Image 1 (cartoon, rainbow, N blue to C red):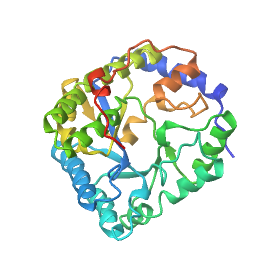
Image 2: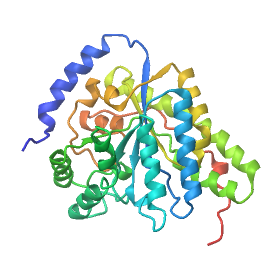
Image 3: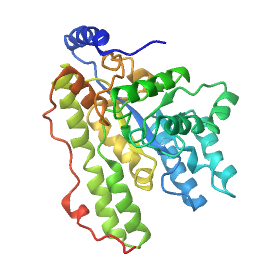
Image 4: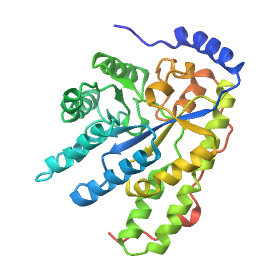
Amino acid sequence: MRRNTLYRVLPALALAVAATAQTPPHGRSVAITIDDGPAVNELKDLGNFQRIARGLLSSLEAEKVPATIFINERQINVPGQRDGRASVLAMWLDAGYDLANHAYSHLSANKASLREFEDDIVRGDVIMRPLLEERGRKLVWFRYPYLDSGMTQEAHQAIMDFLEEHHYRVAHVTVDYKDYSFAGVYTRLLRAGDAATAERVKQAYLDQIDPGFEHAEKASQEILGYELPQILLIHCNELNSVTLRESIARMRNRGYSFVTLEEATKDPAYVRADTFAGSGGSWLERTARVMGKKITAPSPRMPQWIADLPRPAR
């Protein structure tokens, strides 16, 4: 069985990065990936589940940009709603979008046993794999929940071997402005009838986009000497269902064009083997640790006034 080893890959990565850094980029590009699909935290209300999924899809279709949706199939297996929820997967596929495995129940590889995590991967494609095959397509991508890929080198390599045996490729992340930190607050305020504060949260979230991309752009320059094609991580939540078109407009204002995950990962920076580099983190953070470099670019932060909002009584 092939083993991913650090010493074999670093020299090739350094040469590829040096060659690429000598050529000015022709333009920025980003692949949009949306986790926790079809609609996170909507395990009761089928109407909300379908509305959020349709909001995301209609935004992508209106902007004519590709995306990959990472599915937790636990969201589909709701008694009495399974067919209505599975129809959302068919809707995404029939619109031409890619679906991918994000593990059945969003289990962390850093907290579960290897057997439990492998089982969550296998259970995570039971419904969508046949839907893909019916349409002549293949299931290619997997993303670690929480970006956790094992707490030790041995655990990480065992997961990588398992994914390889099941013909999965790992989808990495370079841009993550923590949309989930805003999304829960936004939905809670909206459903409590506080539309004014919810609107303030929405605008604060949109204002995270430029700092989030700026961080990844500067980090890429620090580590690689050029801006790699970015891979954006956001989530299938109510906030993104109403802001995605504006988010895409802000990306375009930064000079970004939109590519598939497959196209983005052709860059040499993604050729590096997925070796153990500590728990969690973006691909830029992992690469920095592997190469012995430090990222000094500041990360975006949630405004303190949002963190200070009162939480509902339990």
